[in-house]
Image 1 (tube, helix red, strand yellow):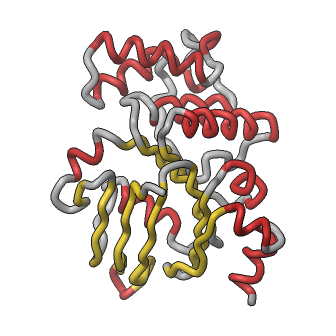
Image 2 (spheres, one colour; image 1 turned 180 degrees about the horizontal axis):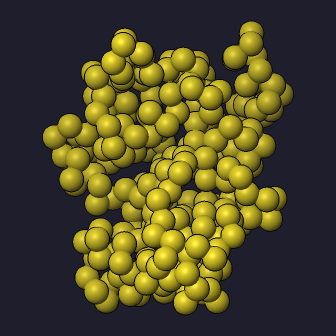
Length: 238
């Protein structure tokens, strides 16, 4: 199985010696990768390192064969990122917002227009393209933020708690979109605390706690061990 992200002994220590990650080593295969862990386990810190938001204290990372420290600009051209709390320009209309963000990401005017139109349709927001984002529901805002993360046609998409705060229908729409991305041969790095959702879509799963890797396995292996909930409890509680 092809490995698209290689993480070797990554640590992140904040001031006052607060350790968010501790010598974490992890291989992420192509497909949908689920990252699980309790609050404060280091999930968001790891994603922020992999997307270039923050730097690790030590360790190395390769993404699509590129070195994170030396070739971050090349990596960013192939990445999409939906943070847990996405920033949206809520006084902008949906289509204009995506076109604007596309231009900021380096797309030509035509590319930004075409991609914005296509993605609005893919996330089922084309009817609201002329509506200001502040009038969108929570689920609609999450979907347009998801569309924003796909503007540059990335090979790897990082999603940090993408269904948090959504109702069941909106959650299912997001999960369906994640599956479609995988069908295009791309990789989705999905962080969540909702075990059922991860089990539905992910092919490979890792569990971290206190910044350390406790478990990694394929979903077929996990199902043979009684399912994700059972494995999760055993790993964290013993």
